[in-house]
Image 1 (cartoon, one colour):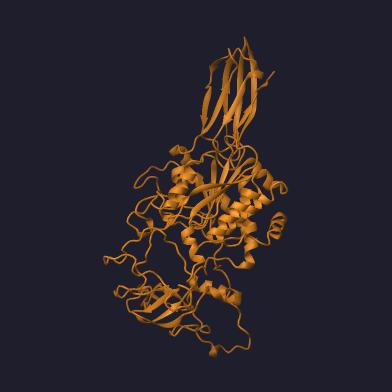
Image 2: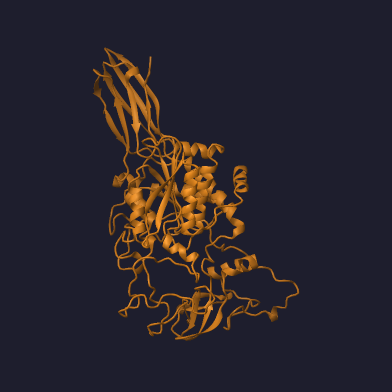
Length: 568
């Protein structure tokens, strides 16, 4: 923990949230100032032509088999703080290379690819005016089936510079106030006698006069729903066809062309470091879909172990989430057999206590904030369990003025088409942006976890290489090929799909020698983590042991060679 504290203290100014131009400038500057270990690689372009780039960080010669970690951030447009974390990792690795022992060891042994922003078009909503969260950047569809597309895009109609939410009084609405905090809304449960009173939509107009506002945005497809694995056809966020979004094509081609990638770390959504993961048996057959839903059990166990380490290091107790249809993370596993560490670094805590009231406060004088409804006020006791939004509001209240921007309050407004409505709710980025006071510590914890991941990469080694003379010019050659890392050489799914090349063991003999038993070239797939091994034996005639070579080659877990030691 002392190392983590030192790392946090040395990173008092984590990378800021940058717009696309400044982000690319920062990446270029890092590469030019540290050209010996950093280079900028092209990944692709967004739909508007904005370049997506990666930093490759590696020291020394890039040899065959050198393992690589791929860090991907900001696939989901509103999560710009993940770009700052990824860029901060790159800066820390580069600037501390040669002085920090663990960073130096990682960069000497492995390659780290960092793609800080995969969705630049959506990210620009953070800096645009009015301010709004943007997830969709691809083709729009006719959401309301009226023969027109994109006529009711969310917009700022009250002129406050923010595209918030609208709650619209409607007897057909499905939302009611949370009885523990009227600022929060929950879905009405008709089986419990609850009757909805609000519709909840994004702030905007009803330009087509159908009585609905913001129901037909200009764009619908999400980058991180357009990947080919479990692609959800005929859903508006999935896009016209898999990899239709240019960002998706570029990222797929980047990963497919780099066989050195052993592990993928994604900052954003979903999250799989929170405990038990959905999985199926290693030998589960394909049934309704290919592959069967969920990770293979042994692959899930590796990620669950990493999750235990992650929670211990970061105190991030967010639960694992499962909505992975059409995501990059699912594609990496299904199509490349890669383990993917999915990290949602921060969200508003849900376990905070409500701020204590001053002793002199009169409960009878308390009123419900920003609401004209008849829900219980702040001083009224209720047995109802607070919703997640109510718990988020408790945290905002407890944090005081610095974080009050996160919720806009509900303000009456006369809508041009719909009449009386209320505009407010959670502000754009209010539920996802970490507080400034936490960013240095958050970045330091994530960097520490990354370094520990680097220490757990699969690494092939040769143990016990011997040559035993049997007489008559015969040698019995033995060697144990071992995986000295925590992670497996190949995932269970990678072995089944053959999407990752196994280790290749080659026995090299001098001219004139003869191989009598054993294979000159052997492929090894079953090298589990934490010492998984396989013993190979050969019978050779007419060779000096010193002239025999045992070579092990991989695409992503190192390469090594040995000369067998004569066993007397």
